[in-house]
Image (cartoon, rainbow, N blue to C red; front, side):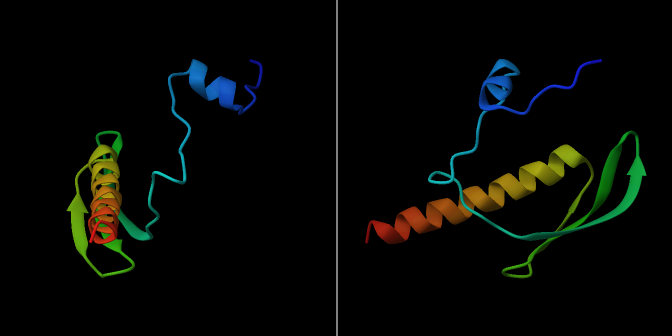
Length: 83
């Protein structure tokens, strides 16, 4: 098998989108994977900036929690900039 080069064109051809720093926020999470069952992870995620803790039952749920946290942060920043 040939090795695929990680280029912007390669990402677009696979249906992936390049992240744009001007639209996305940044956050730090501590992920504690406690179990691996049914081909996915279960555990706890902690927001490093405010200490919020949540449990997750799958890798998809973990990603949704992280995405939601970043989107909440972005909406708070947008709300404060319109004042």
